[in-house]
Every structure is written in C-alpha cells, then in structure tokens.
Image (cartoon, rainbow, N blue to C red; front, side, top):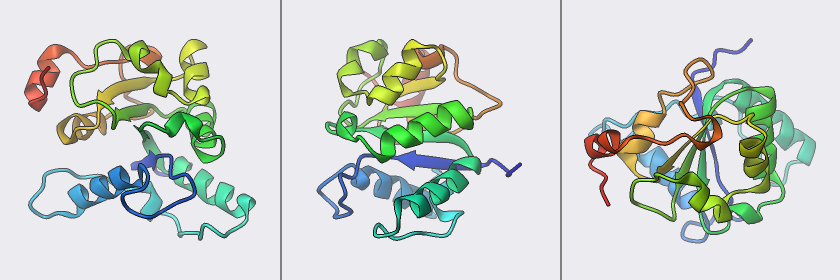
Amino acid sequence: MAYRNGTYVAFHADGNNVPGKTDIDYYYMMRAWSASPDDDFTMVNSHEKVAAVRDSSSKETLRRSLHARLANSKNLVLIIGETTKNDKDWVPFEIEQAVDKYKIPIIAAYAVWDKPIRAPRAFSTYWPAAMETRINNGTASIIHIPFKKAAIMDALGFSHSNLPAGGGLGIYSDAAYRSFGISD
C-alpha cells in the first residue's frame, strides 16, 4: 500500500487551464501558499508526487495517473465554485474514487462563500451529484468550509485514519472559526 501523506486537490477546470477562467485559480493559490517560505501553509501536493500527464493524453492514461495520485493521498480538497456541479467527467470520478475506493475524507472548500458554514445543506445547489449521493447514502466523510487559508490549513489534518466528525455534513464550531479569524 502507498504511503498516504498527500493532499489531492479537485476542481472544475472546464477543459481550460487559463488563469482567470476557472476554479484552477484556487488550486494555483494553494500551491503559491505552500511554496512561499514566508507562509506557514504547507501541503504535500499529490499532483506533484506522480508524473504529470498532458490534457491530450488518453482518458485511460489520465485515469491511471489520477488513481496513483489518490492512492498516495490522505485527503481530497474539493474546490467548489459556481460551476463545479456541472462537471460530468473528472470531478465526479475523483469524488467516487476518493470515497468509494480510497476511503479518504473530502474537504469541501467553497470558493463561493467566505463566512463560517454552519448548515452545509444550504450549499447543496453547488454540490456535484457524486458528492450529494455519497452524503445522502452516508458513505462520505466531508468537512464543509469556506475557501480560507486558515480553515483549509487546519482541515488538511484530516485523513483516512482521522476523519472529521459529522459524516458527510461535517462543520467546524464557532470557536474554531474564531481561532481561524473567520467571522460572519
């Protein structure tokens, strides 16, 4: 079995890797936080642990690479933006594999919200169907947070052996949000 210390980041890119056009910007932001020597944000990026593949690679080659990345991951950060639910290809696959095969928790980081999340179901209109199905059938372990560095940094501590409380509807307490400097 692989050594699972990485964080897998999933986002809807809509077949585009041009900055300013998709949720890939949030992924790049996380990479910049982690790369900065002046920042205490650290993340072992699962995408950098496995050889890169081109967008023009066959679907089967991409699937193999994604499986290898997920197998080396302790958690999955799902960046949820305005269009994430529209992804019918890779985001559903990544969620299905993370939950069903690799049993890793999801950190649902909402790019559409910057305040404490107390009622995750209020954000269900943003959920990809694969995530909603696994919340409803009780197989997912998910913490729902705004896309804020302090909350993400804390949530990166969750793993397959240290799951967030609350099943698929996990949330942080108001005290935790205060400690992160996030308020209403």
